[in-house]
Structures are given as C-alpha cells and as structure tokens.
Length: 88
Image (tube, rainbow, N blue to C red):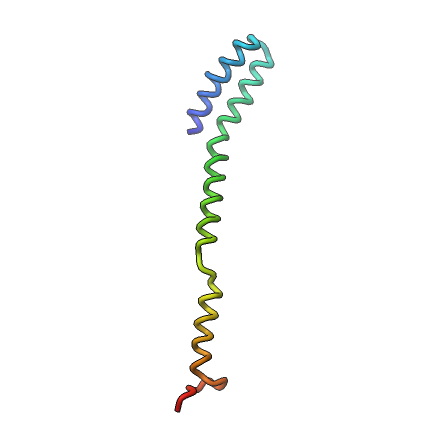
C-alpha cells in the first residue's frame, strides 16, 4: 500500500506539479511533500479504523464487576453472615 501511494504521488502529483510550475526547486519540494503524504496516509487511515474497531469491541464487552457482584449477591443470599446456610 505504501509503495503504491508513494509511486502514484511521485508520478501523478509530480507530473501535475511539473506541468504547472515547470522544473524548479519548488516543484521538487511539492513532489516530495506529496510523496510523504501519500506514503503515510495508508497507515493513518488503518490506525484510525483499528482504533475505532477496538473501541467498539471494548464497549461491547460486559462489565466484569456486574457479573461478579451478581454472583456474590447470589451467594450472600443463601448464607448467613457467619457463612452457614440459612436453611437448617
């Protein structure tokens, strides 16, 4: 992906800049900046999508203390404070 972005930026962006500005230092700098943007763009997009997906997974998980508190509440209902069974 990075290589495709880099090559397309150099050829398409560089070609467009050269036809507009001609061969000079500003055109070379603009081509280099376009190449850097298109080189790092795939990582940025994938990182953003991964962060969004991780957040969705995290929000979809049950809260651990909810299941723990209901289990402890269930256990405490069947025993007295001394730990003995309420029914004899």
